[in-house]
Image 1 (cartoon, rainbow, N blue to C red):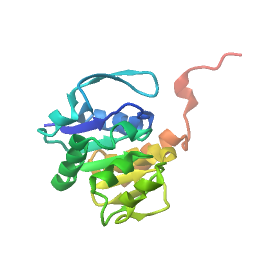
Image 2: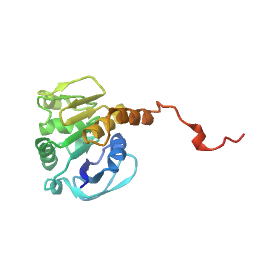
Image 3: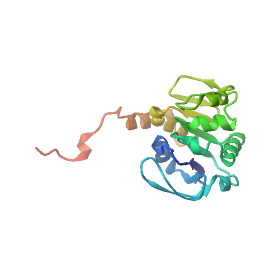
Image 4: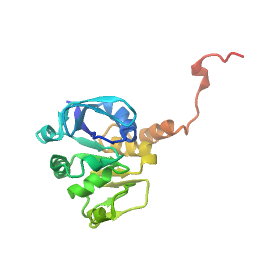
Length: 198
């Protein structure tokens, strides 16, 4: 049976930040898009996403991984179903990956208490208290047990670490090769591209 991954989408999200993770997980996992409401949702890229279930409906589901992109989460910071979904994921031991401003939603749900995290969230001063019981680590990717947080420019490493926790790599060498390939740090065999014409 394939593992189940929920992709949390919301108005204003920048879904690009989790695309590499989705590409990596899609071969071995079932991917479901969840949002405040069922229907469709435009991502920052202009793509129109078909939403499989609302946050409320997702509360009834069991899943192995939840991915949270950044962007502007202002429209969902007070969404109780979303907070409960994140709490349920944390309590069940599901892998939770959040990028850029995504960790803000984890902090609001209270699941970063006592955890290390990194984030690139811009938030009003009156929301600073949500980070009080978490430890900010100034690194591009931070892993604390089942939670992976990352800065937006680290989306390849975020994907690799999330994939590692989800068991999609045979070993660390395969993970490193995947990272280097998608960062362009490898020797390309141009002979596979055919002859060069003048």
